[in-house]
Image (cartoon, rainbow, N blue to C red; front, side):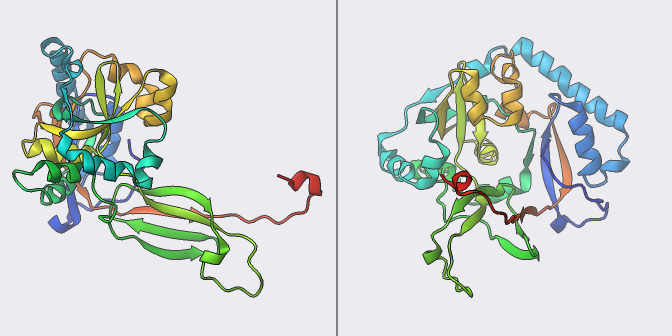
Length: 320
């Protein structure tokens, strides 16, 4: 369940103020789904919990059925080599700092992947965002256009706004769900363009921004688990695209998975990599598994607060 702040949701929100979200039912956990509908869905607090349990149970039964009719569906992954014509674009992406920072831990490769068989851990998709993504891609994209859609250039980032909220607090906000705190870094004082009442001895920067936003998957146990780019993958499947370029990170043991995967996957690897029929991308298009809800449009806020302490210590204790 994503950590969104709880708000009182008005039942009378206009169409311009709401999104549509496709929720994948029937898999862990029912409690998350009940909480989501009650606290996030427009009018969700008036829906009888028994009704929600019934629809979740129906989807759960559907997964039991798929375990019998599609055992090993996720294991039948289909991967093709990337076209040699795309190598210059691969070189362009891999030469960037954001690629090196995002994929600096495990063996990585580019490949064309049949996307509907990719295992998914994300339980819901913002359909409004999907429509915005689809609008950027031609009906019959070329290889290059498809590649750039899956690995968008850094220049395409949503607007970020900021205001000071206290003597040691700043608030940043963006319309993107991918907006996040990135890092704390040392900054060269000479590059700050800052004038003080005295000499500047040092500076740090608290950096906010976005993830790499590259379509990527974790490769393990003959399966591919979608790691990043759920909305892009959904948009491609919705447009009828069967194969898409994906960055694959090879995982060979549990410790490696703990380093690169999200908490839900790292805590339950057997469910995603060993289960008979885990949730896959195509399940979002199965009417027996999917439920569309109206939710308020939200802005993602990153609140940055810092603390300052002054004290004295013997020279040996402060030495590097």
